[in-house]
Structures are given as C-alpha cells and as structure tokens.
Length: 461
Image (cartoon, rainbow, N blue to C red; front, top):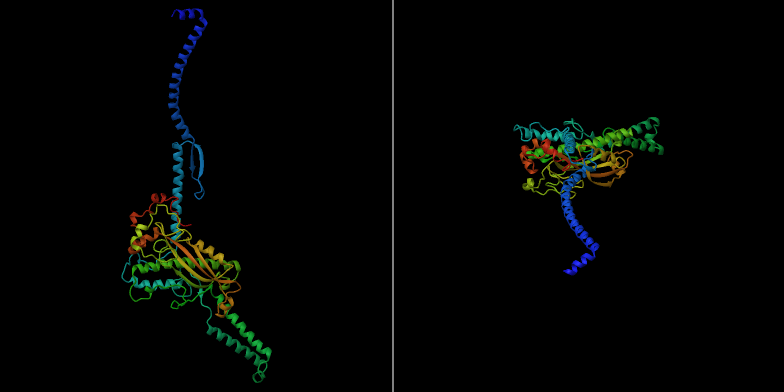
C-alpha cells in the first residue's frame, strides 16, 4: 500500500491522466446509453413518417380514358379523399358508358326483329295461333327470296330462277324461224335449193344471239339466282316439318322456327347489302353486278354453341344440367377456342347460333360480302371453304354470271342473341334448356349488376 501511495506522489501527471480517462469512459457510457434511447425514440417516430411517405409515393394503375387501351401507371400519388373521389367519378363514367354500350347492343341485336305472330310467345294467347303460325312461318321464309308472295317487309334478295330449258328451246326455235323467213323472203329459191353456207351461218348466229339475249335478260331481272319453289328439293332454305303437318306445333318447335327466321333474315340482309354495294360500284345491274350470284343453300345449324353443341360437332343432349353449366352473367368467362374460332360461346349474357351459307360468289367481290356480314348484328365468319366453278358449265345450265370469276363458297357464320330481350318471350321449356333464370333473379338485369360486369364478360364486337 505504501508503495502505491509513493508511486502516486511521484507520478501526479500519470494519475491525473488515468482519472481523466476513467471520467471520460463513464461519460461515454452514459452518453451511449442516452443515444441508444434517443435512437429508439427516433425510430419509433420515424415509422409513421415512413408510412405516410409510402402512402405519398404510391404507384397505382390509373384508368385510361379509352377503355380499350391499357391502364396508365401513376407514381408518387397520395391516396386521399380527393383521389378516391376522382376514382369514383371515373368509374361512374365508365359505368354509364357501359350502360349506354349495353343498351346500344340490345337495340342493335333486336332491331327489326318481329315475331311471326303477335301473342305467340311465351305461350300462345289463343288455341288458333299455333295453326296460324304454320302459314305465317312459311310465308316469312319464302319472302326472304323476294320472289313474290308472302310478307316482304323484311330483307329480301330479289331472287329468281334461271330461264327454263323449255323457254330457251322455244326462243331459239323462234329465232331460227324468223331468220329463215327473212332469208326466204329475199331469195325464194332457198325453199327449193336449200341454204347456202353463209345463210346457214346466219341462222346459227341468230340462234346464238337469241340465247345470249334470253340469258342476259333473265340475269338482269334479278340480283341472285335461287330455286324459288318452297316444295323443291333445291329450295335454299329448310322449312321445318311442323309447318307442313296437320297437327298444331309445340311451342318449342315454333320458337326454334322463330330463331331460324331471325338468323336467316340477318344473313339475307348482309347478302342484300353486299350486292347493293357491288352494283353501285360497278354501275351494272342484276346478277352480273352482284357479289352472290347464286344462293345454293342457307341453313341454321341446330343447337346453341358451347351449351348443347360443341362448335361444329353437333348437340350433346345434356339439357338436364344446363343451369349448372351456364356461367353467371357477372362472372368473367375466358374465350373458349375449343368450341368456336372466335372464342365466343353461349353464356349468361347471350346465346350463340351458327348458320351455313353455300353460294356461287364473285371471287373479286368476296370482301364486300365479308364486310357486310361483319356489319350486320354482330355476325362473324368462323369458317370458309372455296371450290372452283366452271362458268361455262354453269352457262350450259342457263346460269349467266357475267364477266366475274366465280367460286362456290361455303361460309360458317356465327350469330349472337342477347338474353335480355329474348327472355320475356322465351317459352318455359326453352328457358330451362338454355339455363335462363327467372327474370327477377337474372344477373344481367339492372344497371348496378351490369356495372359490376365491367371488363369481365364483354359482349360481342
């Protein structure tokens, strides 16, 4: 102990340095403790500041003014009541646009669609109506050709048959006779000595010219060739059997006939539109000016695509579980390219039917028909087959097509039918078969429910 005290007395500077170091160490420890607590308090305060800053730096997809274009990413935006109000305005505008677009689609889909008889659907208002429906249906089908008879208030083709072989034979015989009479009146010896080579050629040319005149005249009197006799096997439309029976048809048969009529009318309207445009562009008239020269057949395929028909494969006969398989109208439905090349199939918003058109068509003018089909009532061509036509061979059958190159074209046409306007007319048996819910429970009724569909289950283009 004495040695320690002596060392302290002899080394005062060293002792002072040690004391200072110890005091500094204590102060450092105290300061470190204070700093740690301060850091913890600052970290606790920084957390809400970071949260506020993250809200201010939000990156959100902002709706594009054009709903068909991608959303616009917006960065460094604060989510506050003003932004929420702006979104409400934008989506409210989208809801209104959807309502307007949907209402337009309904109007366009049902425009000009008249039932064959008032009071027939959803159930006949009187016992006589099913009997009357048979003739009303037949008249509407025949009227599509515009060849006389029936109701012509809808689209019609102004069709006619080519001149008969009997008529042509009579016309040629008349030309020959009149030419011979002229020759004999000039040279009496012709009766005794026969015709010279030049006179024989004159008779031949007269007969040939009469044939051309008859064919051209018949072609100018119509816009399309077609068999206009509804009882002929070559009549281009299928008249359903119930329209020819003595027994009254069922309401399901009449509904199918009504759907067939509406599909046929739309396709006929497209053909009529294409032929009119071709005539205006060429300055010609009649069959030589037309796109569709000859209507071979136009049929409506059975079944609803994607529901009881697998595309072009035919029906499945699964009516019992239709409501279970039918998607709700406000549930997104991805395109189904298995059943349709367009991806569209029967769903909770619309029904899909196919029609098959077979016709002799001007190849150069075919785009006019494609455009016309695309313009009429959301129709789409989903399949096409083209076969060569020998115009000279058709001429031998009295079909005069003009100077156009012609091919036999078979088109499969997709048509869509919105449930909203069909449902009130649907017979109960049809509503069950297509999974149509009761009107009070339909998901595609009312603005709020339709607004919820925005971007989910868009209608056809």
